[in-house]
Length: 112
Length: 494
Image (cartoon, rainbow over all chains, first blue to last red; front, side, top):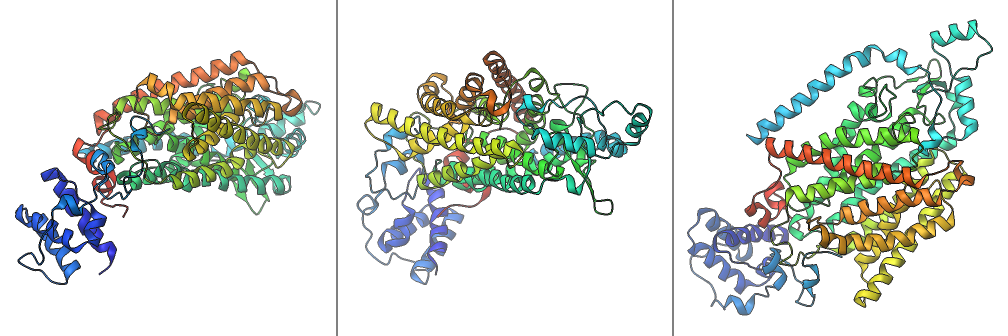
């Protein structure tokens, strides 16, 4: 499956999680890291939201080839595996990958 | 419900246009050949070369009424035309036409993709597509409005110095007749086909509202934006263009100089942008969290396209491929470079670092400020205007922005409004009679600049109230949080 399709589904999951749980996830990392993906898929299913469950199933089939009823691997703490930048938390860019190197404070209240 | 309201507005607009077009279509033939008072294009800064004006006027086929008068009083020379009229093919300058077609393409390039990239690079990733689409959609929308009513309101002489006639709605009177080897020309640009002049002016009508997009970026509803821009183009852009560029317009007849649109385009858009920023309110989290730009390389590419396209904007405004166009091109390059160097020098002094965004912003500030002056000033004027633009626009995008307290997201007022004011006023200071034959007045330049600022601001405010009442201007908080790309357009940058 194409990376684009995986990222599209992951982005949809990201939006719902942020709306319902105010939880920010890293979309790029989600499509790259299988353990992180399984964790997010499990969280999505546990919420028992029809759309979210569908997206979780779709993502699972895209990433692992088939829908599994139980977690396939030991989940790791999201906080360890997820490089969520301060930028993402601050302005809602949920898939930035700036490595935390940029001083984003200069963009508070002005651009220039 | 919103869709219903939008539809009602659209129907009212179209109905109004059709009602007003009826007499225009009936009077088509007469208007196309009408002649009247003397051309004052020199004062508007858009005069064709003297020789070409004379030739076109003398050789142009007069209307039957003019023939009768000429027979009765053969000693009286026909007055210079003040409305579009027909000429023979061989009276068109192929050189001027080629340059104006090139300029038209260059100015269009400024909006798509120049401004699209310039703005898209500065917004957050979740709003990149919506910001880009807004400029692109404006290009399509204004193209239609311009041919339906905008051109007529802006460039058709009327009894009023404040607004043009509706006689040219739907481009009534635009002619190209192969059998008789005739085509229509504008009285403002008699050496090129009127179709080319209409297209050239259309690209200005497109970029002006597109500039405003930067002020309300990341929070305006797309449908509201389309309706607002339609109204703004008709009730703000067209009248101001008429005041300044139509020789019988209020400011043009007073000797106000605006070669390529410092007042019509930049002050106009800057004032409207500031009012939009106030009316829509700040973005959620503004001043508290960082709004990280998506990709500043896009912004630099966009600024570069703007710079190149600006040669069409300024040198094209000579409406001829001549020495004055060459001077306009030269001073444009000089002022732009000086303003960019000034901006980064200030950054170096104040912040101890030079930014790419600063350099690009300085260049745009210089381009804006030299716009009204480009056909009137020499190299010393360009150097001074570039320097002043760098200093003033830096302050406009930083200190003044804090002072005003509006979330003018991409600094439309700070750069275009302030740069336009600086350029308009300094045109009166540095105008060189040897270049244009025109003399400027700092007082009149200031009056015109402030008058446009006020008119644009007030009418924009009224239009925004109307659109807010009818449709609603702003997306809701949740949609804004998720980004306009997904919530308005169901698309996303990956």
